[in-house]
Length: 309
Length: 313
Image (cartoon, rainbow over all chains, first blue to last red; front, side):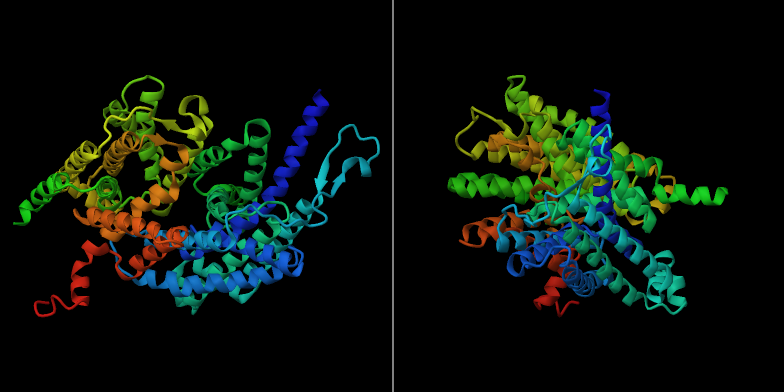
């Protein structure tokens, strides 16, 4: 009895961590955009949906593996993000109005258009890419013959997780080692100081929006072999991305990943021990609790520890 | 002249059913006035107090479900839901405001957005109490014709209009504006911002909840995906105010008229119905970029654009 319980618990933990890796990638795009632009992008999930449809059609029409379509979808999403920033968000930043949240409402409008266009063109059917390795899995008993418990690790989930980790590391190097990356971080930290230091803030904003879109596009491509796809899936992922961003701490790369992992494990636990339907309520509780008790997110805890030493 | 404009409009609206409109036109008129009420409620919190809420569906739905549960669980007439929803939504928005009003700007927007979604999920999952996804059906309708429904919603809208106007001319209204313009400055002047934001949220919630309770009575059927809908309730409430004009008395009416008529036109053109969210989204983007203060708020700009006021300005 206890063995089975332990097995279920460990299995839930593993799938939570794997899901969390992908969540981290979704959250990274959001945290970048929020850190630099100081606006929330409520079309984030819809951008991911667009990337998933790109990956889907590439698979159906040209039989390109979803993992390879990352290299096609991410650049396309980058261009889309740049276009949105240049032609829609920037004009709104200049407009004087009573309500300060105009840009947020604007991104809602963009999200509505994207989701509805997807419904018109691709119908609201649920779709998935039937890759050949979808049901493959590693089993613990394959490696350790007489282990008392049996755990499994799905191949596509594991591959997606590894991809997410690699991309995160690349992003970290990009942000901390290259000139463009440093300029992006400077813009996020202090806009005026960045301008005085000769950073082309306008270009950085455009690049950041593109980069954020490309990241969430990548997450979409990694998600499609293990998830299904329908036009209105964006909204729920926008909320997830936001919860991760708050949980991790605004603008913090490491925080976004940790936030993603925490949320992934949490959701996996809720669906095992409670019911799948309550997951959104749990997310909201985490979100509000985090804003009230830990406004700096996980990143602030990390920072405190470093200072303490 | 301008002082009596609301009374004129009210008189004009109240003779509308006597003219002998058909049932479809009455339905549109009821929808316009109901949405104008929701728009005014949103405007009180969003336009005047500056707290942009993406979750007014939560209050609308709670009001609607109060009426529905009165009928399905207590066996009372759903009309009792209108007075009852005042108490229920007051409690609900007070508790919610306790949490979300600590947040500012985009965080507030997101917390409210999430609150609407959470209410939808809760209503879906508590199927013993709310009927779950099946919703609640009101079996016996009070009236077959629409005239009385029209007068009731007109009364609600008129009360809302005069309440909002009275409020905005009082000290409270100036507090709201001060909070919108600069919350820190307002606080340093000795305004208890949390208290006044809570008042604005509760009032706005109650007015939306009353509209929700009316909706249950009028439509006779509610389910979580209809009354807690993000795009069909929360976003439309924002759009009505954005299109009509934030922080204006007449904006919500203009916005509601345009949005409801637009929705009906789109629905009636074959092949266009599926695209209604695209068109709404594009309208929203265009309004934000070119008329950020809405039709009423930017009326001077519009007049100049069409060449009316060139001589005077």
